[in-house]
Length: 241
Image 1 (tube, rainbow, N blue to C red):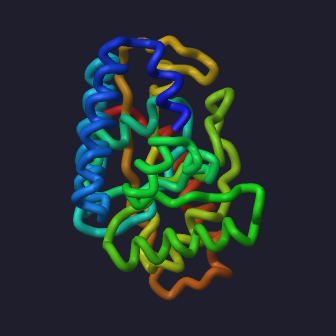
Image 2: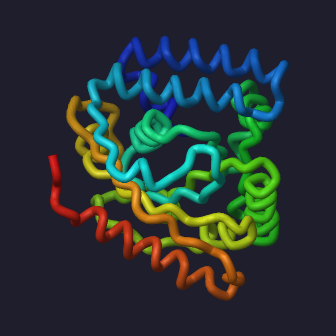
């Protein structure tokens, strides 16, 4: 969510778009508490940011996923533009795991709660496990997806970092596939530590879903490592235009 604070100073159109869609999303949350209408606003917001930033997104492998099915999407993390690119490119209902402190911020906290997003207390391991379990229950009960950046933060140098096991934990508990994704080019659009947006092209490559049928929590390390290996392969696949 720090995306908001970094992008708001970059372009007045991005400011207006964020205010516009954020206000509508907040208002509709009082009438539709499942979060689905808010997610539609989030998709529109992501498309507007990509458009105003002058980013051209090429998506590969979208046919591998069903927008009406729940998944745990995992991706490398290079830039604050990663989330808008994903939101603008992949249909369906997403929820996010966010730091618990964000839920205590006026307006933003209310928006996150009403949207069905899940707070994660990183300083409390036991509470964090409960949050992961809640995310799994949300996926299973409502048929939605969760987007997670398993590196735990943006990569400073662009190199893929080790993955944390939370995404695999959620997928196994929910009984849904893990979908590896590779983002290419977002670091050139907006580098870490920079408030400058550069126009350009971004690729979002979607890998083959990794099923979790028959897996137990003991398999989570192997599952997340399989996802990481597939992302590495996607990152280094030759470009096909």
